[in-house]
Length: 283
Ligand SMILES: [Zn+2]
Image 1 (tube, protein in one colour):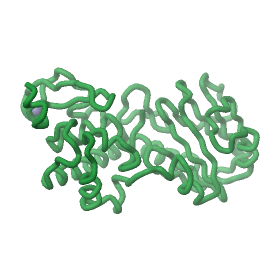
Image 2 (cartoon, helix red, strand yellow; image 1 turned 90 degrees about the vertical axis):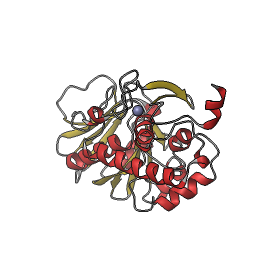
Image 3 (cartoon, helix red, strand yellow; image 1 turned 180 degrees about the horizontal axis):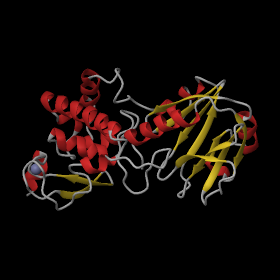
């Protein structure tokens, strides 16, 4: 699933591709992608004649801002956008087509069909699900060390589970949570409120640094992720722990372990990220 750096990359590419384009009409081939309004004809009717002003991101959601309308789009597992000429053959799994009046088309393709689109009047998108449930933007000025520390103090669950919860901090998924915890030297099963002040601080800086570097690299291309121009990201070559089971840790040389935390495959180094006290006692 694309995480913050990948969605940020798609956002940047879409801004280059569709800013200023006028929608002539819209074709919906798979109704279930459209979540709001619940009528696909109303969806297509509302979009007719609007102009794309810019594309923004909130968590893992894209916000396509138009004159008087905002389209909130989530790519989920495999959703992707691409700009085509209207005479280009329509590829399999293309579910929504935005036909522009200059002869180009923005096409939404989604093999797994889990992606969603919600249409709102400007500003309404923040008051309603899915965006109303979202927590802090980790690369925003509002996400400070202080707010992060305050957030952790009340959480008795495992730190990895807390970081994956989009209601607290948005955009961090399975790849970047493992990377950030490794950089901070924190075991994924530590309870969030057990972190010392130094650990809170290193984790905070690890999250911000990991996500920023990944954005710079255009995201990580794992499985099928590509940006809006079909280009792959390159951060997968910089991953130090994710997907490296049994390979030597680049800090200590011991083999990287893969386990399951909160139902998610989790990579960590047992020597650089020492177990919580409780599991040590069990051994
Ligand atoms: Zn290590």
